[in-house]
Length: 395
Ligand SMILES: *Cc1c(COP(=O)(O)O)cnc(C)c1O
Image 1 (tube, rainbow, N blue to C red):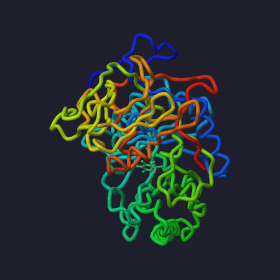
Image 2 (cartoon, rainbow, N blue to C red):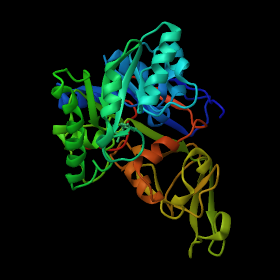
Image 3 (tube, rainbow, N blue to C red):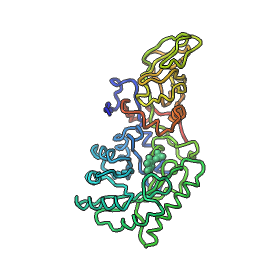
Image 4 (tube, helix red, strand yellow):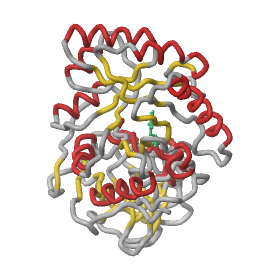
């Protein structure tokens, strides 16, 4: 994928469609989660370009705030962070593919070990390279994704005790339904995890120092699951996982998505707008064109449902979302070329459009909206408190 420029402060030379990341808000969210989860440590989860917020910039911020660990999905994300000078521990949460192990070790990335076989490969590679690998064991307690099943974890834990060239620094699992109103499945998963950890007590051994299972939903709504460390994803970015998760932590959205009016016209009745001619007005209306589309991650599925804010007012996107442009019906209101258009975020007078609304319009979840604002959209990083801003208060 092309890498479009990532810069701070200067917005003039970029296309008018931009994502604005409010770094002080991200910092405040991290601190709020930390205060809530203490004494458990917080591992910020930065996979998928830090949920669209900018992998390296968010990592630098988290490192400066004293985050003890970072979590990413793939080896490549970990290597990018090391090449950018990030020095704190990084856990790669996903599975190890093929012969990647030497690359993990060369970049001092912590591996997720989910089978006796993988553990053996890690041991062999570390011995050959003369290094000591850092490993977190992955237990599947009810997600059926990766990890050794809780009911057959014994051999993996047994094998992990014979570690000459690796250090078992952690053991973890992952919730499948922590954002649901009914916490019984999460409780079952936590009980299964504790059952696995009994292995250590039964042998009079201490467990690995970092036991972790809680994602954002469990951080906010299931404190019994915090253990030694929690993995904060969407909540770090200021968005709650679902309406069912109790608002126990005051976080605010750090991402705004903005564009500008580039064209203004009057559309007469009988003259349909956009591909497929799916929408027309029965009276003359003013329609403005905005340079954003599904090629940026503004989903076509939102056609006929989405709204934007111009001059403090919400207006509907009419006709189909195109690859690079949308049309907005402002009825008979005033708008000029160059006027700001808020796609996600808050206007100065308080009107706001949230990530949750876009998810609703597109028939998806906030994670998918955030991770799909692609690299064609320049990121602008706001350093000062009170400038810019994401959508309204949460929590
Ligand atoms: C993505 C991910 C998280 C973070 O999930 P959120 O719900 O966004 O907090 C935590 N743990 C693992 C293993 C993940 O893959």
